[in-house]
Amino acid sequence: MQIMAQDQAVRGYILLAEDEPTNQYVFRAILENGGFEVVIVDNGEVALAEGIRRKPDLILLDMMMPVMDGYETARRMVVDPTFDGVPILALTAKAMKGDAEKTFEAGCDDYMSKPIRRQDLLDTVAEWLTKPADLWMPARLEKREGEGRRAA
Image 1 (cartoon, rainbow, N blue to C red):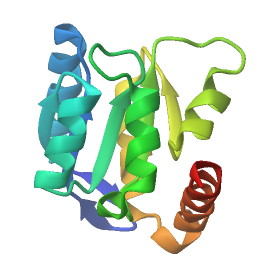
Image 2: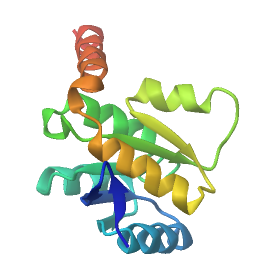
Image 3: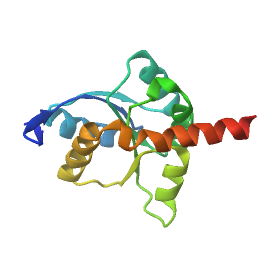
Image 4: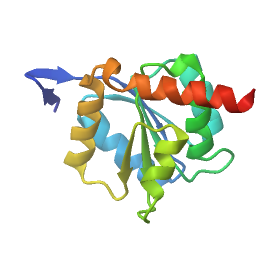
């Protein structure tokens, strides 16, 4: 099966940073059945290295992982030009008030709360893979500039 967006199949290379084996299995099955190539890593440190080694089309980033959590990973990705044009979508089991805002403050471009319905995941991934970067990259570049001013 392929996801159809504007009458064309959407495909891409997705980097999934998720430490829970059951979630890894489920996300891989859904995404690969949707026609996507998926590489799975289990922490943010490895996600950074893998993303630099081979630039993904989209990143699904669990917020609660060992070694380096998703918040720190997103902050580092946002300031690294290697990840320009790559949507970063937060995945979290926390659905508490303010959690979405925390992911956006860290630099994520969108937020999904687990458990995620299969079609919602596929629709969101397809939406971000077809969304022109000039609609969302300016906010990231603004955040990068703000981080640079704070570091100075």
